[in-house]
Every structure is written in structure tokens, then in C-alpha cells.
Length: 117
Image (cartoon, rainbow, N blue to C red; front, side, top):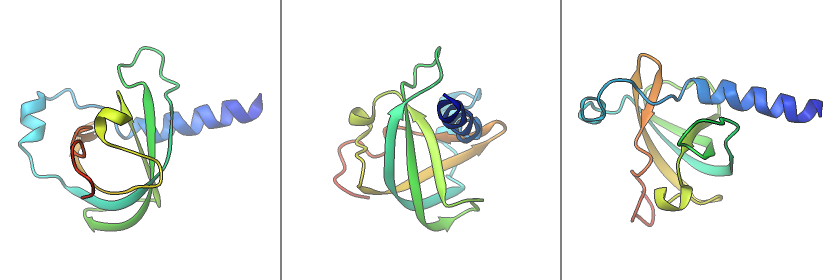
């Protein structure tokens, strides 16, 4: 039981920095990403957030930061549907994120219909 609590707490910590921005989406999307990294999806798990449209949490093992700064070797964010996003465990992707006041905005469909970035 304690293990589930720890996992839930860690998940919420990772997600906290990756909230959707309250800025209009068109405003955020028009900004240049200030974090770009290459990483491999290590897990896709059900989201512990009950009232969220993002039903899954995707966690990347960061292999290389191409621009911006990242304080760790993993990066997690919520998505509504990983299949629609084009994300699969074990696959490598380029992730583009835009810093906002409350974390990062990540276009969860930036990988859709792409075999590999």
C-alpha cells in the first residue's frame, strides 16, 4: 500500500511541471519550443488524476537535450490517448515543449502520423 502511495506521489510531482497552460492554445503553439530533447518512452500508465481529460502519463528516459535545460534524466507528461498521439513504449522521439508560467505545454499530437522524429 505504501508503494502505491509513493508511486502516486512521484507521479504527481512529475506531472506538476507539465500542466497545460491557461494561455490560449494558439498563443502557446505559436511560440518557439524552449525545450527540445531526444528520449525513449519507458512507460505509459493510467493517470492518477481523477478529473483530467489526460487519461495516461507518458514517461521518457531523456537521452540528449538539444535545446533548453532539463533538471533530470526522465520527463513525464499527461496525454489523452497515447495511440492517437503516436507514442509507443520502447520507441525514440524528439520532444518539443514550450515553457509556460505553470510548467510546460506539450502538443500531445506532435508525433501523430510520424514513424520517427
